[in-house]
Length: 160
Ligand SMILES: CC(C)(COP(=O)(O)OP(=O)(O)OC[C@H]1O[C@@H](n2cnc3c(N)ncnc32)[C@H](O)[C@@H]1OP(=O)(O)O)[C@@H](O)C(=O)NCCC(=O)NCCS
Image 1 (cartoon, protein in one colour):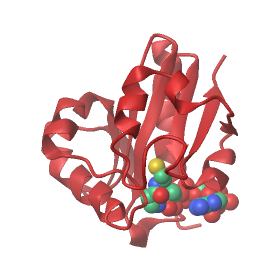
Image 2: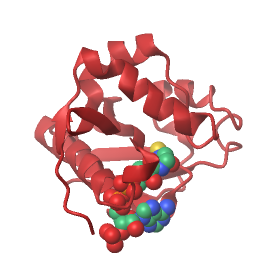
Image 3: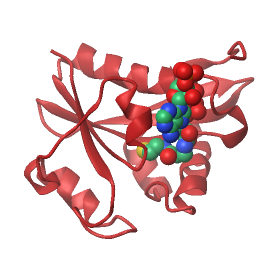
């Protein structure tokens, strides 16, 4: 594996456009949800970015849904920088953020269950609509259809 020269860092408002470009690149391939710039700016505190040579090459977000549950969203790494551990650093930073905030459970919805299984995320049979209304609301906008029909797998990580 190539030695990583970058750093995982709290996102700043000035990163919002780079985050949008990264996320929407994969969203155009139906691999994740499109994000509006104003929403990224509103939730900028959720985002961690991976910077290399001053450039944002990866991002992930941890969004608090309730006192007990947060969702990891928008995990993306620029194609040419993939498979060098950047995704791992970003996901681990999100889990650390949840731990520091005292949030015990972290959920995500993904088309890549094999990838997230490597971190200890487990598939859950609980229906998405029973998790949290904010999550369910976002699910309704998924490109491939509403919860249960979009093909995304719900996975949970228990921190405590
Ligand atoms: C998924 C994604 C974020 C992974 O980023 P990455 O920087 O390439 O991931 P890492 O290098 O940290 O991978 C860690 C390990 O998982 C493996 N891996 C990568 N993708 C995998 C997959 N789809 N299934 C199983 N394992 C996978 C890597 O080979 C690596 O293995 P190693 O630790 O033994 O070397 C990246 O491929 C991506 O941006 N995909 C498009 C957007 C997307 O699908 N996001 C996830 C949905 S929210």
